[in-house]
Image (cartoon, rainbow, N blue to C red; front, side):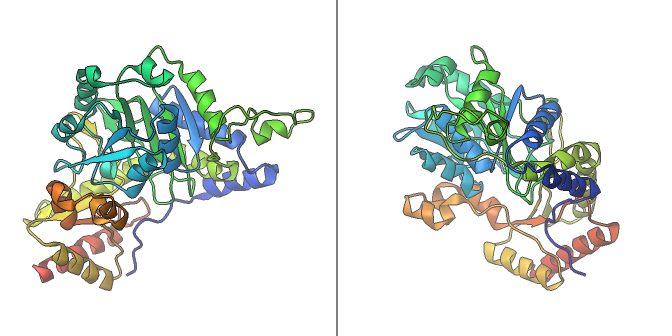
Amino acid sequence: MKIPFSPPYIDQNVLSEVEDSLKSGWITTGPKVKKLEALVSHYTKAPEVLCVNSATSGLMLALSWFGVKKGDEVIIPAYTYAATALAVMHVGATPVMVDIENDFNISIPAIRNAITAKTKAIIPVDIAGWPCNYEAINQLIQQKRELFIPETENQKKLGRILCLSDAAHSIGAQYKNNSTGILTDITVFSFHAVKNVTTAEGGAICLNLPDPFNNEIEYNFLRCNSLNGQTKDAFTKSKAGSWRYDIIYQGFKINMPDVLAAIGVAQMPTYFKTVLDARKQIHRDYNAYFSEKEWAISPPFQNDLAKSSCHLYALRIREITEDQRDAIIELIADYGVAVNVHFQPLPLLSLFKENGYKIEDYPNAYSNYACEISLPIYPQLTKEQLQYIMKTVTKAVETIL
């Protein structure tokens, strides 16, 4: 039996929506993008949503909007995908990496110890779809207001560190009965091909800025900045007599095209109606099975505060080495099951090593990584395939142990 790790969910609705975009004669940024923005806003309750070409771009645009620059610091977890750090580096700032807790998410005490007068933003990451402890993070930011030194108009208006959530994994997750998208000042989702909702490539910036910000005004500014600082998008310019435009900002070119947005437009309602529940049921099935294995540590799923989006099933194996984990993965692959590891902590990667980050400074990040195996979790899995995955993982683990 061959079981892929994370194929996209493509049904007839997706095919029809994409075909509609192609036949419309308009495939770059236009009405499909606006519709997707409206859908994300509807399901998350975010006041304003801007779709862009990737979550990485979304993080960069948000940091740039806040005036984060060379000499500034942005606190991030050491346990995340490289894009979290690269977005900070691309605007010239320094990523300050901190360790994680045993739920894979950023450590609040570690954030507290890392805040300095140079800290302009914190980027918590909802690993595997499990929301961070946003109440504690937001309280900490308020407690540290006196350290914040504003240098731009937006920094002065906010008057504190920006909380920018990297929610690449967590659309559909909840924290204290609120959806990800409205838990921080700004939230960025990913719609990459392997995500719960996809546009092949893409992302969304959710604005939830407090007074005195006007989220609609900030949306218009960010939208213009995502289109090279151009006052009219191509769709508007294409209308008869509407050719003249201006360039008013030194913007980026990171807009989402309609032909990709069409995939998300079709997927979004289905995701919240059936697909998210299907992912949760697979998570429950895994939990029930692995709870009987002494060597298994299941990932967080639901408690009184939070509910996961079940983007990944990050299984951990007790008391094994990284080499043993790798050997287990090889055995699982021999049986035709594709699994993964999420993530290699950033200090293990060459770019970050060369910039002076050392894995020894992040013991929790390394210990969780060294024993983690991400299992397939998507609605197309049959009961037979799910049983095969669980038995295959068990056979591989117990062979190595």
